[in-house]
Image (cartoon, rainbow, N blue to C red):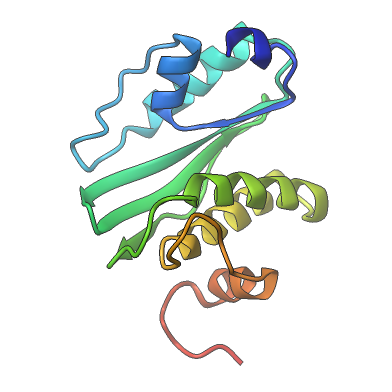
Amino acid sequence: MRELVKHVDLAIANEEDVQMALGIQAEVDVYSGQLDLGQYEKLSASVLNQYANLKGIAITLRKSRSASHNGWSACLNDRRTFMVSRSYEITHIVDRVGSGDCFAAGLIYGFQTLPTHQDALEFAVAASCLKHSIPGDFSRSTVDDVNALLKGGGSGRVQR
C-alpha cells in the first residue's frame, strides 16, 4: 500500500487503515467511545508529511458505543485546513458493511459537484450515515435523500 499511495491524490481511510497499511501510528483509543480530534489532526498531518503527492486525506471517525449504536463523523485535511464534519448518532444500525465505500463515493461526488471541501465532507458523512440503515453492502440512497438529511438535521421531521 505504501507504494500505491505514492500515486494517489486523495487518501480515504480510517485510523486502523492508516496504521496497518501505511505503518503510521496514531495515539487514538477507538474502544472508549470518545475520540480525540487533536490526535486525528496529527495523524492526518503525518500522512501528508510522508506523502508529498497527496492533496488531502479523509479519515472516518466511528464512536462505537455498541454494535448497534455508533457516533459517526469524519475529518479531512486538505493541506490548508483540518476540518471536521457534523457528528451523527446512529442507533439501531441495520448494516455497517459498505458505509466506508459509501463515504468514499460521497466524498468523490462532493469534490466534483459541491463548492467547498467542507460541503463535500458533510455530504459524504450524511450519505454514509444513511447507509447504516440499509441492508447489504451498497447504498440505495439518492442525492435528494442525502440532501434531505443535510437540510433536516436528522430531526426525523418530514421534509417537504
